[in-house]
Image (cartoon, rainbow, N blue to C red; front, side, top):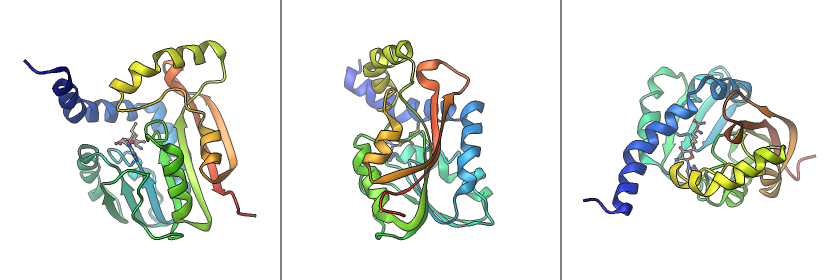
Length: 215
Ligand SMILES: C[S@@+](CC[C@H](N)C(=O)[O-])C[C@H]1O[C@@H](n2cnc3c(N)ncnc32)[C@H](O)[C@@H]1O
């Protein structure tokens, strides 16, 4: 019989990537992507590209290249299967956001969707994003996180330990705007609401941010 650890390894490798892909493909989340991804331009870094669900939402007339970074080879394999349908260059990087192997100040836009919840050291990853973003460039984000209502927050905090284990490290209760600002950005536009779905998982934040030192 498999040990608990071996069962979790099988789950993380073979079941979780498909579950994540399915959850991220739900219509309300797809509508959220549509709101931010088309704003990207030039040389783009997408952190936590997952199964590549954002690829069809980039504006091919504005984007020259997308670096798609993700530490999961299983997620990247799914993303690779979508590349044939896009008209710009895509280069995958199999590394975590805490270790972005790009030169400083070389990307025009950074896209991060439903990933700041999962990155173990999200502040470090945001600092790396700030390092590689050109002055005047933008971080475009769409994330779920801590809800404003005390009763929903109580559920988020209560379920979080189990949710993290079965959800590949996903936290339900991260304070997304504060995290982005701690990572070296200033938020220029922010919207938030519950999207359709289970309330502890469905409070969404989306918007755009620039480097904190930008005028
Ligand atoms: C919920 S999925 C979202 C995927 C994709 N961004 C989307 O919107 O469909 C979270 C993604 O974060 C990735 N991830 C986990 N740890 C990470 C890290 N340290 N740095 C960057 N991405 C990470 C996972 O492999 C997974 O693909």
